[in-house]
Image (cartoon, rainbow, N blue to C red; front, side, top):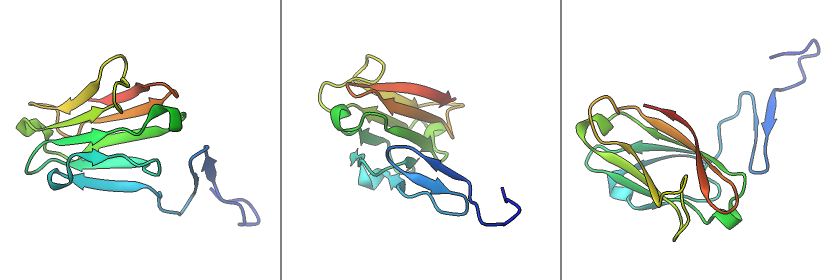
Length: 130
């Protein structure tokens, strides 16, 4: 998007980050089996999971300190091989009422993705692919 003066930039902001067109997304991270279990940081914005070698466990940050945080989680292609990405709340915190959420695990689940939203006391699943 360009204005007549060619000075404005497309900018998207929330309480965690500001992204302007042409800039890289801060907080983009790829994790592998050897990193597991992975503690998601408050600065993480996208988690790409490469499960070649084994399944991955992600631990979400405490909900009280993460209200409004959006976290997309993406399988980079190997979940169809029976491997999984397990996302867990902090302690007894839940994800749509469950202690964990599992992506992948069988045929047709490769390249799955899910986006989570923290509501301040627990996590919600907003969008899923596969």
